[in-house]
Image (cartoon, rainbow over all chains, first blue to last red; front, side, top):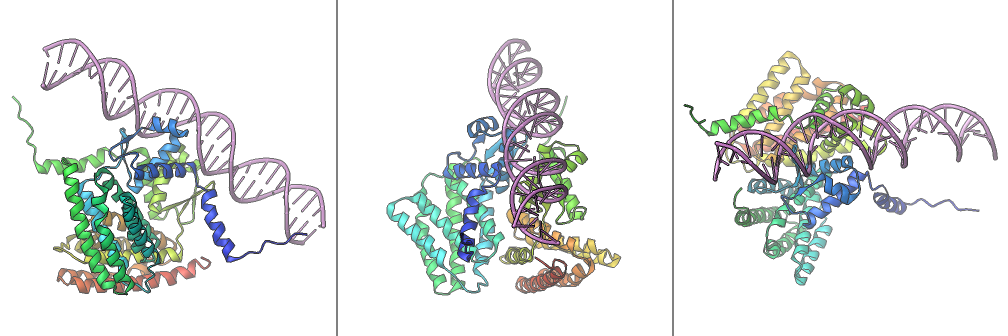
Length: 235
Length: 235
DNA sequence: GGCCGAGCGATTGTTCTACGATTTACCGGT
DNA sequence: ACCGGTAAATCGTAGAACAATCGCTCGGCC
């Protein structure tokens, strides 16, 4: 005698999570995941050329599959495809930085507007992670936590497309951080700013939070542009 | 005796334009252009499966190149890639429609906020094209002109990424129009709405224009959802 | 009659090989 | 030092081959 499996909601959600691990998608997508990881880790710095032949051998896949992965990452803005020259880790210009902040202003501030009922759970989590990393002096982790904070703000819009767009934008922005020297200078100042913003949101004052977010964008953009100008002297 | 070519700014911009014609990009990109065209024309209706073998033969290209083109269009949201099953012209759900309007609200309204100096040239052009097409009774052309109108609004943000994001969103939205029966019903009502919006902008009243845009989104979303429910009965 | 599993054809996923086209680097002549 | 040409490296694309997977049909069985 056997019992039927009891089907519960809990099962459904758990299996859906496992699925992502089993159906890891096509080889090309898994390769793209690996490369994305390495790029955001800074193993491949912006400007680096990724040779088809070298990577093909290193990853043990065919050129076709590798090229499909390149296409994926090019569309995400992490790689740049130059005809007959190969793919390069994207090296952003100052103009790119301005543009990134322009669209982030619109998307993230837009997410704070017309909030039905604010759920600040994940935002709080990100804030706490940033605090904790700051205490440890792990400024890279602080940067990651700050990005999660902004991702959580964007998620408030309740739109899959908004969330994914912001995810891609933050990944691009990480390319800028990678070429700048001092991660502490880049991330530490915003731990307090973000906490203040969180408190405004938690208190239900979305308008004040949006104002604070605007000021944050102004400051961060200016800081990043000036830091970038010194490193990236010629365009 | 020869003269050196005088190098002027005018030259630079003109040559940059010509370049797009010469460097037509890789074969994969040109194939993607063709397929995109056919999809937006409605030759391949949403839900249609695109066979690799058939298209390969029809286009006279290799499978590799075709698959690269598929990747490009999948990332644009026009195609959907199902592992081991092939690619299909994307069939949007009602949830997709809601999401599209959610992000359009944020992006287009955001573009109207914080305008430095409004240049309503291209907006006017789109309005006039819509009027002219409406007189001819070419409702499909009216739809195209209306989309150009919204694209022009998004362009006011002055951000490349905002413009490209809205371009992709409008292309997705076109997939919805393709499965609905009556193009007149879908597009005609908004000719007057858009003209009114243009006049508010031309008068410099950006706040009123934003308000009108919000109402437009509410109306259009509701109309589209109800029309979609009748056609697309089961999700 | 309807359910279930084996087998089969069609299509996709991936690899491998090949070759033309383009870029890049090197090198000798002026 | 500049210019031009040749050779090597790399990319772009094609094509064939094989494995993996899906969808369907056909029997067998309850």
